Length: 529
Image 1: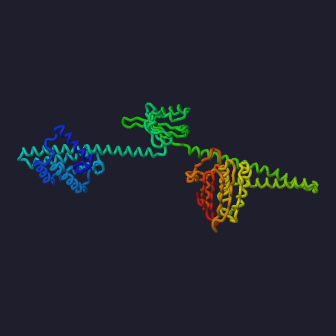
Image 2 (image 1 turned 180 degrees about the vertical axis):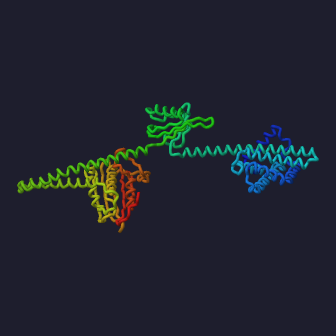
Image 3 (image 1 turned 60 degrees about the vertical axis):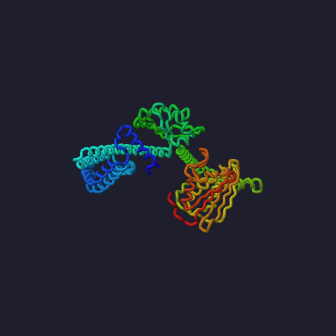
């Protein structure tokens, strides 16, 4: 704090104005108490009512202030002028400038141009001067001294007010710049400021630094196209040139290359900005990884749907020849020698295998059939057996052993096809988590008298703890493109919740993962997604 009890910035401001006035020989009267100052203060105090009345009568209409507000205006200006009069009497009393500085920043006068306030102050000076002239009409020497002191104090006041307004506007600009910078840094995209003449990076936001793995000091001075893979730099230069000539441009086929070599697909929106003497290009680069991941999953989902339709068609075509073969086997059993044990055994095996083929075909057809979102009574255990049978060959080829413990749980109100897709997805995830084989345990039990519990436990690689909170988020995956069924765990979670169920996961790296699903055993209306 300064010696006058005000903050250091204001104290320095007051000293600066005094230094300027003294250096320009504008301080004819010392800035200290004196008899002349006391006399001027008394005269201004006694003529204050007529000065305020005259001022409001001129300023009200000039500034378009409604007459209903003139009483309040009179009260406020009188208080302000009396603070100034106190300063005239005692230059160490700076309350008048404390108030002026504050109001120039955030008070009523800050809402209007400085010229409006300054013209009002000039009118005050004019009215005070007229009052002094009338009061000292018969004492011209004293009148001259008093008017000269009043002029000095008014000049000082004008200098202070001018600086206060300028400082307030500069502070507003700094705050706006800081707010703009914060908004740029917190934007969910990499944003660059680029020299429109050279293509050099002038600045980059925090997201750009984090995504590209470069500190801002290294980014500054690099060319905008240096951030792209070598085979895209000509296209990046063309984007810069187009922005310079047309004012804006965009592309969705470019990539950024990070310091570590990772390539990120981006959508670039580029615009030419001209502000005062500044002329630069701003590029906003949106990471398109999630969008591409979504497109890949959609393509994969469409592939799976097409494969399902193809498999259903093939299964329909196979059923007829199989029926003929089954009839032939029955006929052969009647014709061949029943006493030949080897032939009889071969026919029995052939019939059993044909029955197994028929069961697989029926399961495949049932899986591919669209059952909509109808709530029906589902035998969970039977549906699990059928799903495991359908995936038996896949499980064998992946060297995964299945252990089932299916309890007496009764039926469950849900949608059969939706549950089948959930089981298929969880089993597939478990197999992919065991690239070198392992064990998959599937258990069902009663969680309570109104809920059933299903558990899928694998002995795979597990899920890192930091990823457990994200696995049900849309598009979150650790798999390579093309793996899985295209049905993410987020959809599994959504379907379970639709039928008033819960799904939880616990996992330990290199130990395994368990997904636990609980569903109601009594009928409830499905929740609309």
